[in-house]
Length: 213
Image (cartoon, rainbow, N blue to C red; front, side, top):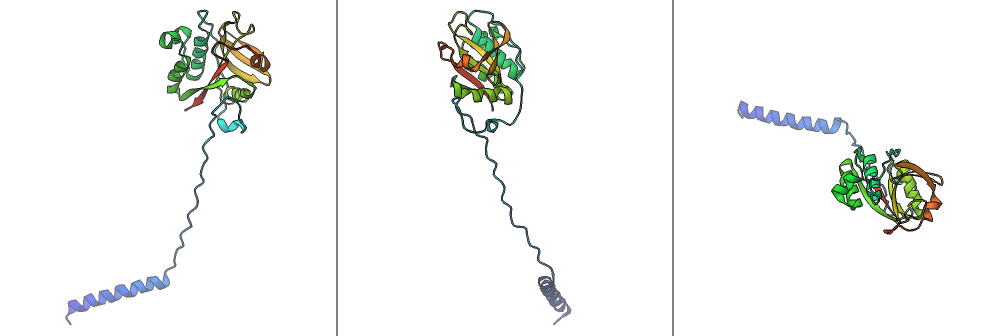
């Protein structure tokens, strides 16, 4: 056997001996068992203004305060447009009025809310008509989330013509309700009972509320 063959054979034996040494002498490291990743539950979505049985905090964790600058309507029938303008200004920081809403959207109030507030990260939903079970929603929206609620209603306390009126609810404290009234251009207060008992607006005593996208 020549020297080259002996060298190759020696290297092969050395490699086998070293592998055997590793198998017998080096400690075996135990890998930690995989930990289960906790699954975070998505926040429950509020689907209706007609009452819900869960903790209202489940519908939003951020705390806010409604900052509404009251506006007076410029025409006799622009209360809805004025209330929508105030809602948009509150959420987006814009400075719109009823004339701006009328020029861009006419009487399409929901479309105005959706299109103007979407860039700020908000959508709007129709919450049905006001009823006793809806106050938990209105309180949560105005007090916890800091967003106003558009409300339609009727009756001599809210509409001097009794043809219907639309206002912007900006606070609920116990039985007291604060709203921005386009008819006066000021914030006013009333009670939940007065609103619950208010006659119907021609389109119903509807509520529109904002949700984060």
